[in-house]
Image (cartoon, rainbow, N blue to C red; front, side, top):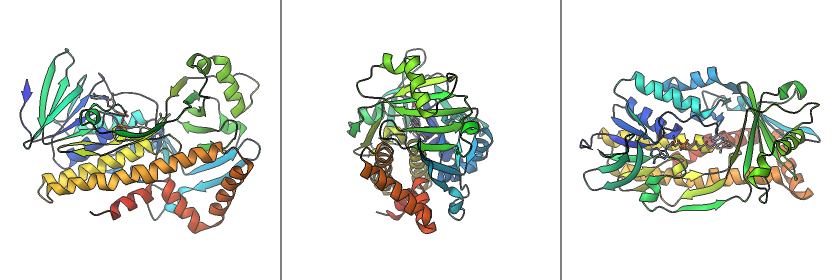
Length: 403
Ligand SMILES: Cc1cc2nc3c(=O)[nH]c(=O)nc-3n(C[C@H](O)[C@H](O)[C@H](O)COP(=O)(O)OP(=O)(O)OC[C@H]3O[C@@H](n4cnc5c(N)ncnc54)[C@H](O)[C@@H]3O)c2cc1C
């Protein structure tokens, strides 16, 4: 069967980015069809941090308030080391004039997928097709056609005016468009261990987001409702069998904080980590956004947030063109605004975050501590720093790019 109406936007992937774009377009009265390869909304545990401007963007869909209710408000975060405890603590309250949400929310990313999907269903006519994997695309002056594998194993073709590839790092759309995914993969993989152990009772000054610098093994400790997540780098030569060995996981957890009894664990997941940005974000009527366009290490919580910012940027431009408020050239501005942010801001900031935490030489460690002391001591510097870490600065920088 061929769906011939081009009066819609096709979206590949019902992750946070695809569903954000779908929600924005639906709100502007534009029909969308979302294709999700899985047979239900994926419940993966990757992102846990929602930044202030992302909450501002999600508020009109009721999602920010729901994330606050289902998650944890985290107004502060810390840098620490094991010997000295807190090195610096930052409070998003200084951003009260810059955002409606001067705090992070700690909440599992899959909850946002459910919230946006429920919002789409509540609008009536939402077309989210599970078990539909996009496999190829064709395009011409009239529209774009997505070839989709259906749950019965068949193939269907769907036509639309534009297509957004938001199907994650292995994006079929990006590959079909032959867009290089430039960058590198870190040698070490990251191990995330979730535990109900109440770290806040043994380290009472802990905040909900804590980065521990250490030349031997840095780690972070983040809280989501009911659980703490510890993330460690693994050594490149460690095999998966060694990494998942319960005794070795226990050694890592004891390194984070020594306890009299072994840690209870609920999840243990290993991630390969990359720093890559697609060479372009648009080819004709097809666009890529989110992990399909850029991936980075999770230090700073910028991947999903940046992807949602892509989705709102692109969907806003599509809405303006759709409703005749602007010509098609506006759509070129999406890549011009968002790609430099992925390269110069998210990529470089997340690499710097990793380098600061793993600093090996006493000089590099001291430099990082001096930086933290200098920023903490000066309100203007704290404000600038939090504009950057909250990603508000990246959105302002993108908005200044007008051609
Ligand atoms: C350990 C870890 C922690 C992280 N923490 C944070 C954090 O705190 N904050 C943050 O901002 N980011 C974080 N990230 C990054 C974040 O998880 C990703 O950036 C985010 O999931 C990207 O969303 P997306 O919608 O682009 O892609 P995805 O979430 O990958 O969604 C893509 C969807 O497309 C579907 N799909 C795939 N192929 C097809 C196809 N061919 N056809 C149709 N559908 C398809 C998939 O099933 C999936 O549902 C973290 C990542 C890791 C690994």
